[in-house]
Length: 250
Ligand code: ZN
Image (tube, rainbow, N blue to C red):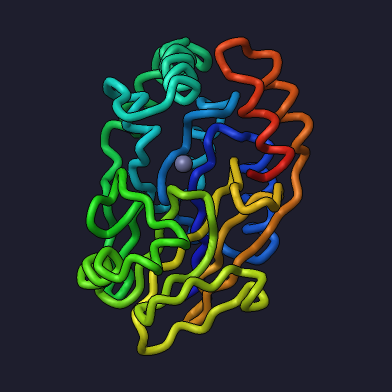
């Protein structure tokens, strides 16, 4: 079983296209998206269309939900981006059919997906849409125990935009510490697949994961960051800081 896991595209078309090209280059056709197709970035329609076209499974992210319903719990920069995103999705680029198709697609996204030993969520196994699991949570054994109790064996998630492997033995392994590969074994793990469109681990390259039989491989893909930043700067509703953070990868 070989599968590409992408998450947190955040309407970054250049990053999404670069990742899909990298996925294709490796002969992978099975692609799962763990949510947050939209929010923050300048190309929500295009990114939704690419996910509809290429992904077999897609989960609902908190920003996708924010675009669908009233956004709740977002800071003002994120909230403005969500309202702008909603406007973009209402515009009939590609015809009224495309507008309805995108809304229907978002509206029907599931919150979790389970395939045998593997569970896929956006945030956490406890609160799939909204809960963050950060590297420093390994120092909160109660939280980790509660989360691992809900993991069948392996859980894949996004949401924090920080890639890495959480082990049941309460370790966090950053990709560069493990040479970008982790072999699944009997120990339960939660794997954060990182973010395609807005990495926050100080590496501006797009991030995703290849699930390859017993292995998890982290991939980093360069893309035209400045092009995306330019589009963000040119959109008043998208705060400039959303562009700046792409350059820094933070
Ligand atoms: Zn996100």
